[in-house]
Image (spheres, each protein chain N blue to C red):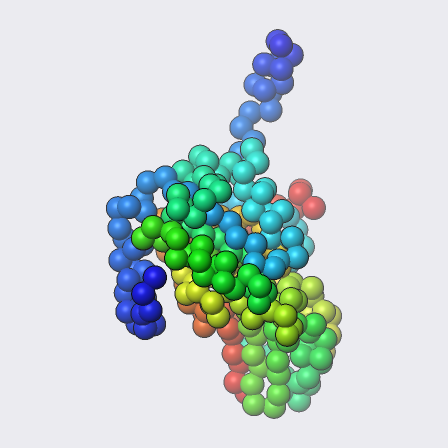
Length: 108
Length: 170
């Protein structure tokens, strides 16, 4: 009993402080897929779309399109992109009120 | 629930997010509409001592008649379309529908002839939480967004917002 009390005092509060404070994310976490428009090259189009298992990423000569509502964060497109335009960020506040907010488009 | 057009519904939901009814404790009903089980494990994690959803005034209930928020997971199979519609119709107004997971948002991995490709093909959705599965924090943010306790971060931009990365916790 006394041991439990001491252990509890030593451990302190374990519950997250979110949303009052931001929550640190582990390194290398794949939360949100983002595209760097300046490095998205229309000449190299197609590799990311071919690698995507859920058709979340589509690309052709005119535009690159990313739909987060279909993305499963597998990271295949990141590995496939020859120009390194795709990457993951540790953002976790991704919920939106409108379906169209989940779509990112790059027009070449 | 009466059929409303998109613009009317948007105004309605904006009013809902500002209403006093959604400032107090809320009950959540979870509906599995053909999910692979991964969002369920994250929703269950919300109740553990680390995330401790109850501290924010959210509780789970087994009846849609007691619920203010319905969380839907899965891409909605043909068999679950009608039960899902009935669940939302049975809820007292005001209510909010949250699509949890990429499959619920837009089909995702479970897209196929057996599924309808997202919750919004059956009932209007108020908050979309992407991710397969979304982490408990992502779901928590979606819940707070649905009740208007946080504002939505600007989306559709290509620039990533800086976030804190804990390098010790690898």
